Image (cartoon, rainbow, N blue to C red; front, top):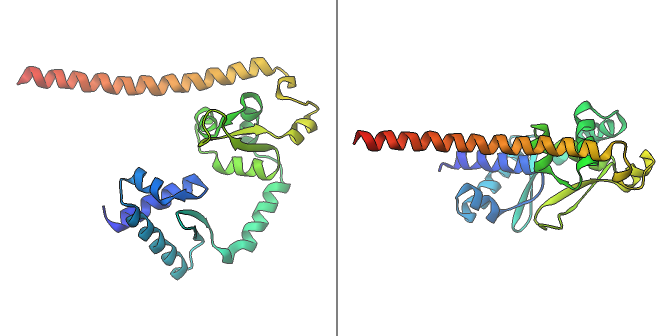
Length: 206
């Protein structure tokens, strides 16, 4: 793998993650050596500085995170303040509704239901104090999102079960999620059948 390609892949993974990622994890995903990953990250960070890019690397001993350049902190802060003070977008309201009626829920599950990347919407909702993030009881490596207690109080309820049409809407969201899962599984099954058919054709022709 070329250095350029490795750096491009690392950049994509760190961008999507939105949090510190360990070198070993990146190396495992990219099927590269940890030393190569570390060197590529250092080179990326140097390129950001030399080219005065809007990105930077927050590097720790065993992990790295893609962040905005410190020189642009003032502008980033202005944007964040505007986001927090402004009305929620339609996408943010949809995401918040899913979390309200389907919590605790992982980011992957939210994105499966909505069909798009939700990392920045979730960040916005967290900053506004509308949702909370914690480790899953089933798997501590996975984070789940829930409506914050303050937000529930603002809605006039003390728990999500008291929300209007809670059971009905939760069931509908669960149906959508299950349909997405079945579509993915059927798609994979279809590909497997095609592969098996091709193998049969090849074996018959020999």
